[in-house]
Length: 540
Image (cartoon, rainbow, N blue to C red; front, side, top):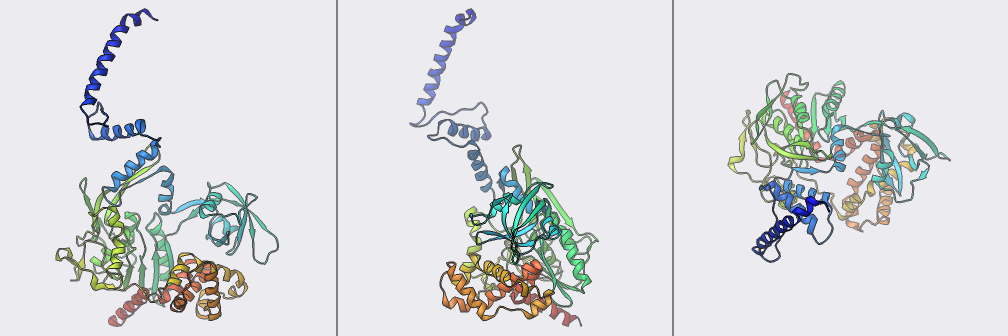
């Protein structure tokens, strides 16, 4: 032993004994079962760290440090408001990809049917379309390995077919009418994720544009859609924002700017640490005049409500549908060193009249997410007079119209939820994807006949689902485990026929064809056309 250590060893032992006695006295003063925790940094942040370390060191079972920390972060943020959230690194791409507008892959829409990957459509301009891959093709091999009849799942398909731009993947396809497999080597590329779901002319002067979310390229997509319909004679517009969950604030501002004159207030935001900030329209709008309606429902949130609220407050558009979701909180995303991120609410947004659209969340997260179910239980989706607002939530537009804050955008024209076709049979068949499966099979078996329709107009006018095909569908649904409901079969017949027709149209004319068919009997769209036609007569 080193002489220096030998000399000081008695002193070291004595100090250790004294320290042990002092700590022991401290622990005796605590209630039974308690352990004395201390930190040199006496603040709330060190308290959290001390507890996590305590659990990690002394908990009865082994714990996962990462899961423990992330659970604590989630709980803290959830306690603030329903929209502040933590995003783990492995989930961040899935959160941001839909809004960023593209991903790397082969460019197909697919559907798993009978345990086989079926191509619904090749994305326009993508590598699969360029190679000639068609709707109805079945992918049975990937890199020489069988992928049919093995219980393949959606996430398996994404893992196999997505990849970095420039990389290659080999697939083998089974095509109806071709006796042998067709092999393709596909070079992956950037595949656009579109947010303008549909664009078409409802009549000779009314155009329809549906926006599914507000992403990075939504504005450019909207402008392309608008210009295309304008060339076809559109002078009136239906902007469909139903079931649009929102997205980027700046994108919503750009869309609203298309319809408002320069210097009109679109929205303003303010928060404890963020000053009041106004967002004004510019002079670049292409449809600042001309009749328009905006469609909303209980699924329209955030950025959708910014657009609808601004156009309602300036008496620019007629808002039709049902009360929107009620999300008026602005989140800011901050990245953490490990690749994860935090989305923290930093402000509230307000419409031009000063309305806060955020619905209450004082009852906690679980009560907040149940609120839509409560609306339905109280009859709000079917009866407009079931909604009651305090006088303090009433605001007046420049045109003298009364509008309401305190929880979503109230439409100018209420359209109740259509429940006329609801049945156990329909709900079960829809939730299990039976309508889509039947439609894909029908196209596969009748492709030569269906390709005889050279354009959508001829298909839409001439094609319908006959009664014998519907009977086949009912038999097919029952064989797939759909609950037996003979009364529901009759009650839901026309709605199911229309939906199957729309799904068939989607395989040939994509989303435009689907929405054109399904909207023909959509009560909200029908009401929108009535309002625009009425305005036309009043202006003549």
